[in-house]
Amino acid sequence: MKKEIFELHAEVCKTLANPKRLEILYALKGGELSVGEIVEKLGITKANVSQHLALLRQARVVSTRRDGVNIFYRISNPKIVQACGLMRDVLMEQLAEGSKFVKKAKGI
Amino acid sequence: MKKEIFELHAEVCKTLANPKRLEILYALKGGELSVGEIVEKLGITKANVSQHLALLRQARVVSTRRDGVNIFYRISNPKIVQACGLMRDVLMEQLAEGSKFVKKAKGI
DNA sequence: ATGATATATTAGAATTGTCGTAAATGCATG
DNA sequence: CATGCATTTACGACAATTCTAATATATCAT
Image (cartoon, rainbow over the protein chains, first blue to last red):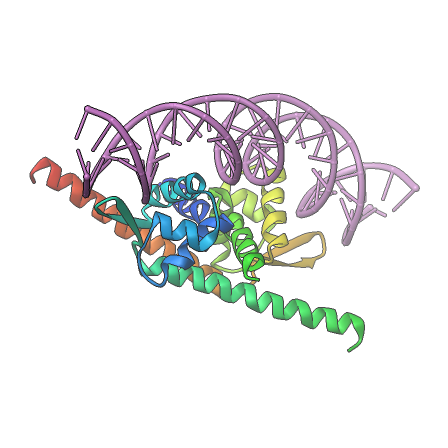
């Protein structure tokens, strides 16, 4: 019953489970960008950016708009950004906890 | 600078990017469970559940408590659940959109 | 210490993800 | 229609995941 939901959910997570794709998403947080602009901004190969964008598009995490020669990408749903923000929060808390532990271990 | 953050963030996402691990997480939403209870609840091999739990533990998504022979797992941070909830929302919206499209295509 | 139960770890095979190079497509302009 | 620019696709090499089956560790009771 719910198995398919978990699989779809995992697909979405898989799409977010790559540092370059996350970097692309965060670049798009400020508004839509063309492929070329993303390439320039992140310093990744065009082909590679295109491949990652294809995955993001396929998962409907981003949407596109063509303007002449350029194709502009934008984040489809702000909730994706929210979700990423929460995960980042968790990460930051963990890092803070981590340094606390380090300090504790060092007796500071 | 931020590259490491994106990599850590991707690690967290990778941890969530598996249907069985998501199923485990959702099982733990109702409170802590022992490994055996998870195995029973989800119908996955013990070894496999253990492997998935190891990954979740490593990513600090879950925490453990030993009580005699049993080890109880719980979700470390409620924000993880929140994030998953948002992603699921997006998914549901997409599914709704999808059926709308289907209806449109069929002329209903 | 031995056995019984719960959990964890390991090894190896199959599948999947990533990235680079090169070739291909789409669109605009001369 | 030929050329140039933006983007995508194809394909091969390599790394990472996932599963099963077997083995190992930990705890408790006897």
